[in-house]
Image (tube, rainbow, N blue to C red):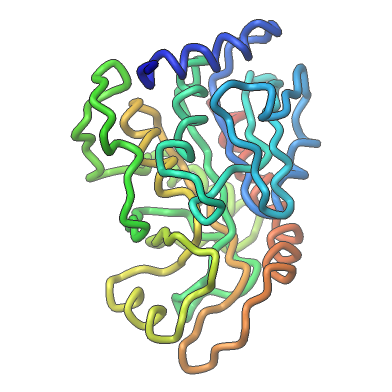
Length: 273
């Protein structure tokens, strides 16, 4: 059986065979955010099913397209959509594209997602800059992967998100005059939304937002030594005492309407690199 390094090299070679500038920044576009692809001066678009080891997503608004191009003159690679654990994929499968992006030359990862806001100060349409995370999926992309060429097996997660990138993102939000909280993201398996008791538990654990992605990608990115920034769009308010039923269509709509804020931060961060 091939090692994870060999699988990564095969996928990267399939992408590089098309010829493209070596990307400096990797971007993962979450729910409702795939339209950001229009902001990219595209040089190459590859469906995931043409890349060995990539999994085509089934979640709505996740296009399953790898885009290589430029933003503000900086070479980037963007994932228009991702796969999730609730689709039946392992943590290792979810994290695999991050490893490939690293192999392509990426040094900075910007990861976006839709989330439920549990902090009472958060409102629908707000952004949260992720300062820390809790992996409540009870799975890790590092399990069983004894391959030191990908990075340390016992990866340090004491500071998963880059402080300088967080400060720059906050400054962009202030300049553009929109709210960007800083908070803790808890990643769950899904696809069901949480019960009132679960929201209360998560708040007691010190979390501000909950979602069904990101945590495995961040772990893999840190193992690879990448600088990471994560942006969460608050698509619904999760108040146990006044909880209304969440609907995926509403989540997608809010994420789409909040996309200009995400675009502003991504463009500002990339332009400043």
